[in-house]
Image 1 (spheres, rainbow, N blue to C red):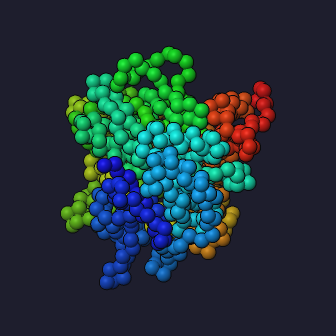
Image 2 (cartoon, rainbow, N blue to C red):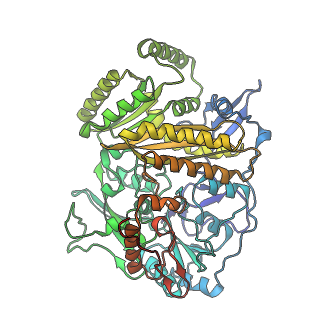
Length: 635
């Protein structure tokens, strides 16, 4: 039987449905919070009144363990007081003021006919519509948690189970001039799943959830290829490939919930990019259901794909980063690799951020000797990571004291400046041995100190658990978000410092309570530069429209990144959240060309999500899309 990850809302509604009758249900995902419903942080008290945090569930390395330092860290850094009485966003609100679906019973039945009248795979109830009309920005979570959704929601959600059903859905939507928005894992942080407001587009909004299209269609082990349906989650895909002795190499932080189709549509990147490449390197071909035609590269023989061809513009290039605006990716042929002989971890402490950048930059030039993953945590993020550590045993406490003394003696480390690089090795034993030797040599050259595999593995594991921290903080009127960029090496320090400074200034200018907490992390490495993540948290207690205020500051930070030489996005994409910056990165001639391609592929604008460069396409409800953008030759 097919599996589908169902949604367990944080609020109770009679309309809530779990599709247990037709599908075997995987572990339930939370709604209104990140991750699984059995995994979340909670505040605890000891008899002496001291506070500590623990994580429910057993999925992650820190699950079920006491974390004594987190509350104190948050309170000191943001100047807040975390108590049970300070909870401001309860996890069980009711949704208020959500308009009913505009879909008529006749229209609902027409869509149901495309999926063989299986009423378990079509829904217009408030829970399904709310989940499919939102992603995972702080704005989305704040609105859901506050019980007030101020955005337009899709009129219906439908779950196709194969390409034929998907084609039927798109066909009727095109005929009736409805708008279709694809939905993968719903993990986007760009408002890509938001429906255009009615003032912009009055048509019916159809959300197509791809999760039931999750099959591996074929595997060619000799050529290292697999043909996979696009709705499969990263977790399911990795598990299925591992059973065959292979890995996909792609491991974004969201891999437990995000989908193959979503990775392609956003042009995603994973933490092991150094070894396996980004999604554009892993995907070889795509099959697409379009508004006019189904699109694919043809082969005379089955189960084959070419490593490279010179046959004009390829379909894969069109769909990478298309964000649901050119068609729906039905399946893809991807590259697979035999599971590495060994996987090992390491960590390096360095005296300060400048030393850390020099270390990580030199590491990026190591070509084939570059580890699968190398991440540099600035001092603020490193201290946050330390605050998330479980309570140490007596023996571990002694080791920490000894390690600190050793670091102070040899590296002249200071708790307010030290940074940490966490490293993952994958490959043959001889390859990893040589990589470890090179890392140790580089660490010494830059005044670093090896902190050991345990710290490196803890940093790797923490990547997946730390995503839950935002929603714990939101309980106590603390808003937080991450955003990323690509930065050239020559501008890296400038971008990090200027962006942090801008956030501090914007926070001060608004006379907001407490202090902001801003940290950064350098992740994927390239010859030309690196991906940089920023994390920004603020106390929103007593702030009017706090989520909007946070969003304003984040947009200011994004502008500062652009002003100082960073990119608009490295792998999250543009969606609607960053579409206002498009004119700063593309000239009108290029945007006009993309819109002309879309008009040829989708003349009725059936795929009208309006993400990225397609955000300002005018709509005529009777004739579909009209391109009215003026050309500025020579701009």
